Length: 191
Image 1 (cartoon, rainbow, N blue to C red):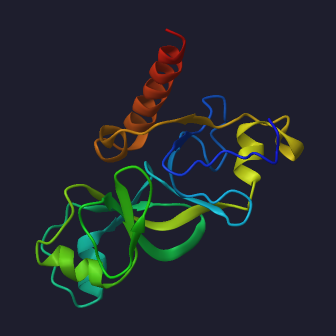
Image 2: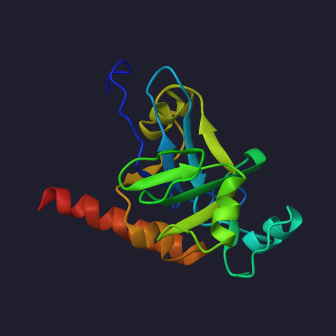
């Protein structure tokens, strides 16, 4: 692959290689890429399948916002900026700081989104994350293509997401479903 012609991964799923050891920080993770602008900016995504012990209700109540639904879990989006809260959601919904995240998804990251959620104004589908995952410009392409310092590492698996993979499961089940989707999409390319 010509390094001058880097692929844009925005809107793609990254799935950690099944051969990664349990000690690896990205062991059995599924990441959705929300931003990728080739050579000039970082690539950013959120880990979809690692839940935290926190709920949206707890965060809202700490901010003085009455939120009675304790179900929505907050997920660990990644090791970068872990105190920031980001919502990945279907793109029919907007808050004061919403931007395109590829395909039919958007991201929001502002306190007003919690006020909207607490009043019942919520997207059709959403997940909230603490932190994000980021790569320096061009780094993800090198990792995927096993180039440069990543020549001997296990590559990321990459595939197109579905709503079911992003919002319909979590944890190990989400990882297994993503691997199956990746296998099916790869197989379908040849037949």
